[in-house]
Every structure is written in C-alpha cells, then in structure tokens.
Image 1 (cartoon, rainbow, N blue to C red):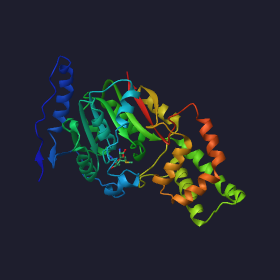
Image 2: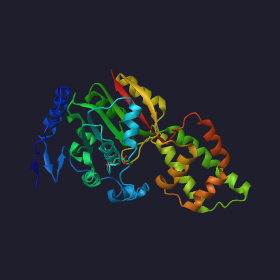
Image 3: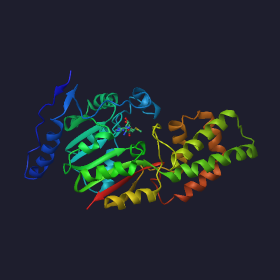
Image 4: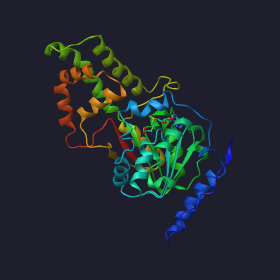
Length: 332
Ligand SMILES: C[S@@+](CC[C@H](N)C(=O)[O-])C[C@H]1O[C@@H](n2cnc3c(N)ncnc32)[C@H](O)[C@@H]1O
C-alpha cells in the first residue's frame, strides 16, 4: 500500500541553520509530496538493474565484513575542498557511497536515490547500524524524472559510477547541474577511456609475450582477453546504438571538459578513491569487473609485466591513478 510521506524535522540548532533550513524545507517540500512505501519515497516507477541486485556487492569483492566502506566519503569531501550540507546522491546502488558519507558524518542531509527499489532496500539495510542514518532519505528516482528534482535545494549532487549508464550523458549532466544551488557541485566517479585503451593494447600484446616467455595461453586466456578488448571497443564507440546496454561509455577527459563548457562549470579531477597504480587497477578490474579466472589472470599479469611496469612509471606522479576517477563540476 502506498503511504503519504512522513514529516521530517528540519535542522534548526544555530544561526547558520536559517539557510540550512531553506534547503531542508526544499527537500521536504519535494519528498512529502511523494508516495512512500516501506520508508522509501517513490518519484519514479521501479526499474530493476540488469544484473541481480543481491549479488552486486559480492561481484565487486565486498563481503559483509567490509560492507561499509569507511574512506570514500572522507576522500571525496576532502578532495572537493568544502563540505556540502544538503546532498542528493543519484543511482546509489547498494549504498556503497551512501554508507561511506554517513559514516564520515559531515553531511547534514543526504537524499540517496536509485531507479531500482531492490537497491534502495539493500542501501537501507546497509546503513541501519550507522549513527547518522536519520540524516538519510531514500527515493526511487530514474533519469526520466530528473527534471522533477527541485532546483536550488542541493549543495551537491553525487553519483558513483552512473553517468556512463545514460545514453545522453551530456544532457543528464546538464540537467543535474541546473538543479544545484549557485556554487554547488556535481561530483561523479566515472571510467577513464585511457585505462581501457592501454588495457586493450596490453592484452593484445599479451599472447605474443606469453608464447615468447613459455607461459600458458589457452582458449580461456584468449576468451578473457577478447572480452575486455571488445567491451572497450563498445564503450569507446560513439556511433553505435547503446540503448540496450547497461554500461555504455568510458570517458575521454575532453568529453568531461566539454560538459564543463556546456554547463558553465569548473572541472576538477579529484583522482581515484584509493592510492593505487595502473597495474593494481588492471588486476582488480579484470578480476572483479571482468570476472577473470585468477590463474588466467596471474599468467596475463606475468606475460604483461614489462608493459604494466611501463604504465606504472608513466603515472608515477599520479598516485591516485584509477580505471575510474572522481570528477567535480562546480557552478559559479
Ligand atoms: C554501476 S551501478 C553503481 C551503483 C552505486 N552507485 C555504486 O557505486 O556501487 C549503476 C547504478 O545506476 C542505476 N541506474 C541505472 N539506470 C538508471 C536510470 N535510468 N536512472 C537512475 N538510476 C539508474 C542502477 O540501478 C545502479 O544502481
């Protein structure tokens, strides 16, 4: 049964609270008009993810023990250089970022959204033990309804690994920027094209290197290598129909600069979520995102060790190099 929204008390403890209250009441004005079911506001129809939502965390190697990632939220807020008070998270999935932001504790009000109702239930469960969980509201919200996000209410909109799911990624970014308060920021973690280009070249050479080095190269090696290369070709393609694909793009830096130009924002590259190297990203991407068999991956890492070492040296001055990095678009 769909219930009407509950009243959420606004923050009011000090003088700065006045401006804060305006944001908070803007959030409430939006949410309280929506139907609500099991503690989740409903702004859009349910749109399940392409893969089983309940398997999502284990696919990325997150066990129950490390279900709440404690450092990402802190990293993003520190790298952004200021702490937004009222934040909308788009496409929160299983609440990896949501939980980390609540754990950090500096954001006063967080609205986390996703198109999938199941993901929102998982997020709700994940944050249940956190002290700041009362600062969170959950909304079922798909990109088709981003126009309904209230303007001038959020200091920041964040999305982790989501823009590349939208066919019209520039249009979605522009819609979200328009919703920000002046001075607000759109922050996003997105995959880099250069990782996929270099990774494909390394895999294309790996077979010849394996033969030279007397390492195994079986059908399984060929299959795994081919999988990454053809996925990269698809993500880099800007002319084919992407409507039915879940993951659609990896981004060139100049495409992100174009978004900044179109939206009148300043672009800042914040780096990856952890200090890491190209080789460790290569290993983890193949293991968890491409689901490589570990022994096949060990052979490939050995066959490609010179190329990987070269890439590590190439990015030596960028200790947060990552296959996907955080980018911030700040409004004037
Ligand atoms: C790769 S997952 C990222 C999830 C989460 N942010 C994380 O970092 O683990 C992409 C997310 O985008 C959401 N999504 C896909 N299409 C969407 C759409 N059209 N509107 C809103 N969310 C969508 C999915 O439900 C999923 O949660």
